[in-house]
Length: 98
Image 1: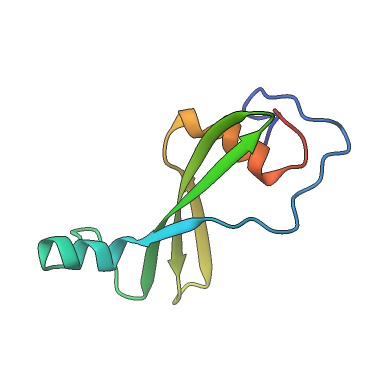
Image 2 (image 1 turned 45 degrees about the vertical axis):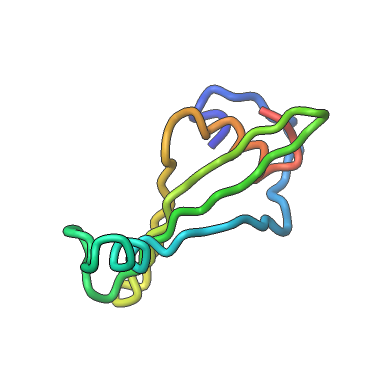
């Protein structure tokens, strides 16, 4: 993934064993805010926005992604919220810095 986005990580980089962040259940949020499901809500799916804080050598950043779960189709989809979150996301997922 780092290569795809033009970042360099150490050749021996591994995924972190654990990543902890906050989330918002987008369906519950929409119902609470607007009193109805989102226009694109599909029965049998769940949608979340995940938030991760990144701290390294005095540098603070954050990464945000969308996590869509299709319970019927047994699939998950992870989408970046925005291009600006790519570098911190890669740093959060790996032991190295992009």
